Image (cartoon, rainbow, N blue to C red; front, side, top):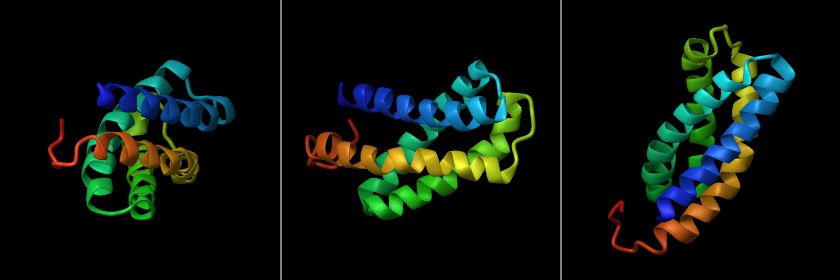
Length: 122
């Protein structure tokens, strides 16, 4: 149950950041932005939170999340948004996501990892 709450919170953070940077400031369709946010949420939760954060710390995980999100937005974004995404826009969106990720990692460490001391991904 904790993973569902964490995924919901992460999806909200990512959608909020992307909707401001991509939809509000750059005119991408909000529904396409939602689709991209869901893809980023799934990939970033498994790779960034359950693997990298568990093995490292908040700072390293946040920096790697920013890099991963930049690449996902830049390379996968045009397929979902039906328009090219400049690297600068992808990077700015990822910085906004990274700000939320910093706080989200504290939540994941406190709720997901502390409740599951054995190291198993439940």
